Every structure is written in structure tokens, then in C-alpha cells.
Amino acid sequence: MIRVSRAFWPRVSAVLLFAGLGGTLSAQSAGCNRAQAIVDEVKAQYDSGRPDHPAILAKLKTAQQLCPTLGDAWKYAYCSALATNDAAGAERFKTRALFNNVSDLGCGSAAPAPVPALPSFVRQKFALVIGIGTFRDAEIPKLKFAAKDARDFARVLTEPKYGNFPPENVTLLTDEKATRKAILNAVQQLIIQAKPEDLVVVYVSSHGSPSKQDKGLGGIGYIVTYDSSLQDIWVDSIEYQDFADKTSLIPARRKVAFLDTCFSGQASGTGSKLLSIEGVGVDDRTAKMFLSGEGTFVITSSKADERSWESDSIKNSYFTYYLMDALKSSSDELPTVKDVFQYLSSKVSTAVAKEKNQPQHPQMHPSTGPGDVRIGVVPSGGS
Image (cartoon, rainbow, N blue to C red; front, side, top):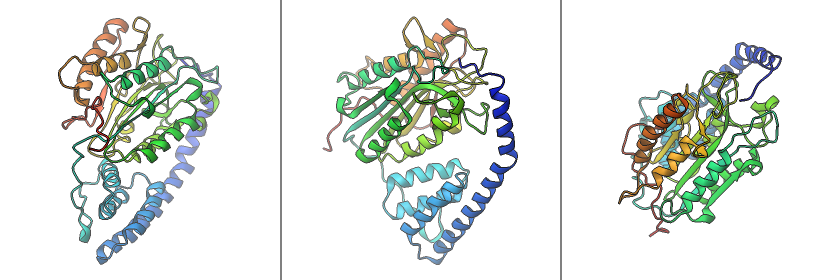
């Protein structure tokens, strides 16, 4: 558990109060006003029947940066991405539009065409596996098994019997290798390497910290990296939204993210992944940021108001231990993502309740649908 001094938190809280009630809201309002003006220009182009789709996408990228919650900025980007045959981008924009309360995805004279079905094969498979238990800042407490979790999970992925990932396609970043720069560079490599027909798995095990605005009340906002510092946690860490945005740019139509992070308060028990004042895990809104259309899934280690726990007896986190166990299914068929989640739901909650007398319930997004992506599928190489 990170024990933050009384002198530190009141000072931070005062700064947040100032920002929240003054400059931040004003800046956000001004940004959203500018973004709305851009969307109005785009809508006029659509109404004219002569939309310049590449130019529209460039304009809407600015609007999305100015006001990420403006649903129409994502809706019109969805329509223009379809018009330029960017199916992966269209799926990502569609998800963001729906997430920001857009109910009608029509764009007037340029009604969107259906997104192509998922490829019937997996050409190649890639994985980014991150586990951070030791931190450069000695004020950040160590996690016993986060790095081991990552190494063990990467090993299962590369085993032909279970994961079938080519070893050269699995990037493993643990402890001092898992700096902010190294992690973002690894995501960039996936954006360059992966193709729409591929499968990509992302795994993260570390401390999490609250978002700057929520002050610990609205789920994890940041991933704590090896080179994060406690005093500048919101500067040195990786913002989940930024990480999710970059991950969603990976062209692969099949992506699965496993997030084994949480943070908690000063009165926590031994063995939980902790960081700050209130004990909450990854909330639904944060988790959904990773979604970029059909074929993408996010499984988190706990509910938003729960801690994630490590175990001295199994020498892993409960979540990662049973995740690996699920992938080693003895069934004749390779387990689907839905199968993996159902196994996690049963095993993790039972084990944590028994051994820690605490609740921990993994969550999956989207929670409905077939969930039929199989992580262990043998890549075809394109055939």
C-alpha cells in the first residue's frame, strides 16, 4: 500500500478543486464549443451531398481531441471511415460514438455501409505482456508477483499446446524494462506490424492510480510504470485513456486486453494491488475505452469497487493464475474468450472469498455477444 502523507493529499486536493471548478471546466467548454463548430462544418458537407472524406477525417480528429465526449465527432468519422474503406477505423469510431450516447449512426446522404465480417482465419498473432512489481521510486511499494505473472503468462502464450504465439511476436516488459516510453513504443510497434486479419493480446499487471479529476472515486485513470514517481504520479504514469486510444489504433480486428490492476486506500490488507485513497478497480467506462468493434474484448480482474489480490500460496495474482489455467483447458476445443471469462468468474471469486474473505469479481466487456475469439488458435500465415 502506498501511504501518502497528510501534507501531500490536501495540497493535491486543493489544486484539483481549483482546476475542477475553474480552468478545467472553462477549457473543456471552450474546446467542446470549437469541436461542435467543426462538426457543424462536416454536417454541412454531408448535407451538400459532396463530402470530402479525407478532409473530414482530418478535421474530426481535431474535434475529437478538443472534446472526446462529443458523440457526433465520432459518428461522422465512422461514416467517413467507411466511405474510405477503413473498416478497422470505422469500428473504432462506431464504438466511441455509441459509447457517447449516439443512437443514430446515419449521416444523411452518405449512409454507412455494413462493416465487413471478421476474417475467417487468423493470419498472425502478437502479444504485449507487461508486469511491474518493482519501481524506481522506493516510495511505491513492490508487488510480489506482478513481474512473475507477466513472465508466466507470456510463457503460456508461447507454448504450442496452449497459446500458439510465435515467441518472436511476444513482447515481454517487466520491472525496469517497463518504462513509460518502452510501453508506448511497444504499442507503436503493434500498430505498425499487425494486420486486420491478426489477433493481438495485451496484458497489464501493475499498480493503478486514480484519474486526476476523480481523485480516486471513479476508477483507475493511470497505469503506474517502472519510472513513475509518487509525487508526480499523474505526469509520469500512462493515462489509461491514452493507452486505450493507442491500443485501439492497432489494425487487428481481433484484440483481447487483460487488465490486472487496481488501487486502494491506506487501510488495506497485505496482498492487494494498491495505490491511493479509495479502493476501486477498473470501472466500466475505462474498460470500454479499449473496445474498437466486433472481435475486441476487455477482461478486468475485478469490479470497479473491488481490489485485486495476490496469493502467497500460488505465487501469482488470483486473476492471472486462473487466466493461465483457463487457457490450459483440457477440452477438445480451444477455449473462447467467453469460456475463459466464465472460468475466471467462478474460480477467482471463490478463491479470494475463501482465502482473503474479500470480494473479487472479474468483468468482461462487452458482456453480451458470442465472445468466440479463441486465443490459442494456430495462425495460418494468411492462408
